[in-house]
Length: 97
Image 1 (cartoon, rainbow, N blue to C red):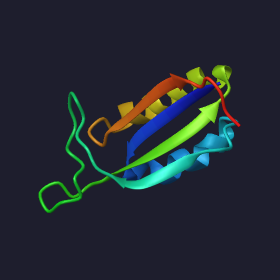
Image 2: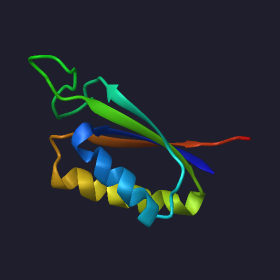
Image 3: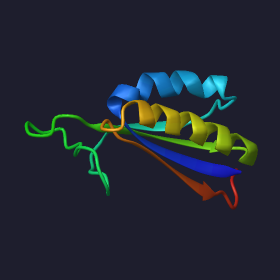
Image 4: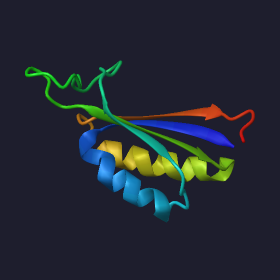
């Protein structure tokens, strides 16, 4: 099992949540209004007057074989709108209940 943390511009949220089902990914937890700035490019997401956009975050635990499909989908979405900001991080899940 893998944990995939997706940090995304709020504009991507509805589409990603809806498309998780088509990737056979049912369960997830999400956070709204996550603030930050990318390490390379893109715009800050501070929810301020100068930088009004905000991020959301989604955490999903998936079978190992779902990870490449999910990352391919997210990479394509990021390439369509690179300045919005979208990142995904994958961690091993050692144990869970």
